[in-house]
Amino acid sequence: MEKSKIRVNLLPEKDKVLLSPLKVEIISFTVISLLICGCIFFLYYYQVNKKNEQIILNQQLEISANNLMEYNENLSKVTQLEKAFLKRQEAIDQIHSPKITADIIKGVIINMPAKVNLYRIQLTDEMVLIYGSTARYKNVSAFINNLSNIEDLSLIKEVSTNLTDEEIIDFSIAVKWEG
Image (tube, rainbow, N blue to C red; front, side, top):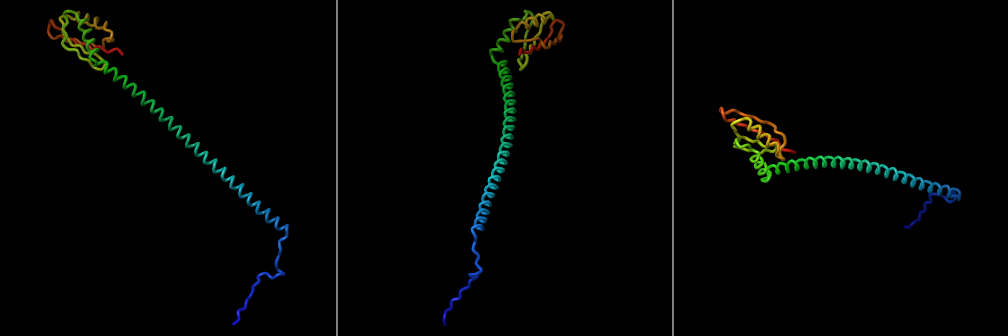
């Protein structure tokens, strides 16, 4: 059997259409125009996207700046509280230091009238409590006047007396720390 070659020609020779130069120019102009429009659209989309990213970054930066300012405010408040606490603690430590305590007791004893008997001196954070007894109230007032001359002490806060027996008066004096 013989092999036959069959050739199929979809477009017969007479039906083939050749592209004219004008059609080629129109097609190439269309393709180039589509490429340019695509590039312009891409650049526009890229710019819009870039602006949106910049807006988001600015918002995040503003939020971060606000958070940082709030943190700094809170930190300064904590620092102020810490300084106040340390200052108060230093004052308490200074009040309870042996030198100050000895100076206060020495000042109390030096300024004590002869007929006043002290039996207790108590130091607290804010004041000195002095307990004693005397034969006459006049001695208590003289003692109070002498106390007001001590540099570390301020005005007398409270004086209470108690007549324990006809001749002896028990008294307690609360003297506030200066500062």
